[in-house]
Length: 230
Image (cartoon, rainbow, N blue to C red; front, side):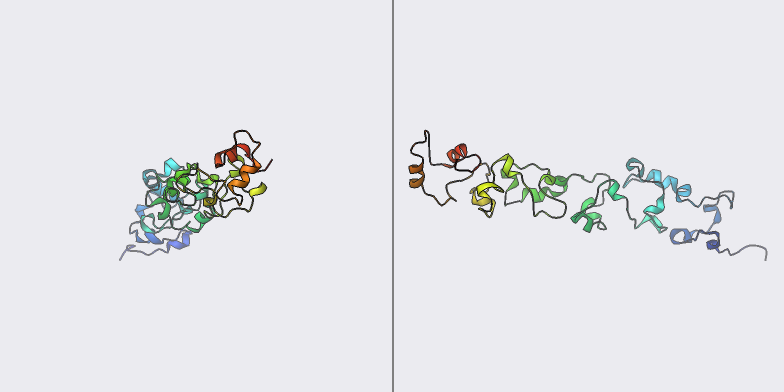
């Protein structure tokens, strides 16, 4: 008898009790003092959860307090999405394909995730063989040669920094770095005389009037820094 217990279809208020909300037994857990003036905004009830978040720390990252952008009403806030990831680190190319597999990059730690290419891809850099990036002393700023889509094709300003191989007479005359860099563990070394068709006797004859001429690669580069005969 009496008015208790009673039933109330909460969905008629425009706020359906789903997920963790459906497990609430006492109206007073959400309605403090007034049933009419309770805010429907998530943060009105869950501000403490926001402030005490640790992984990631929502305050430190400046994540919006509109919880529904990432969370549903499921208990324990899981699973969650993060559609504003691009505001922190743009996921493009190959990274976009793993957008929903957070553990690949974060491994459970959302506060201390590396945000440079090398910090995530140091093993690719260290294990590279053609060319051996460590031996060649390549910079660890992967983005200077690679895109986020794949490692190949890659760019490398060999022409202006070292020797024209993508332009001039050497364009299309080689297939791999090892054609000229015969010691893969040291790209500071190079060979001009091993891959050219001419032989030493011919070169000696052509250079018989050149002072200081020597049949070695260092001399070739010294006199022909642009790869041209003149």
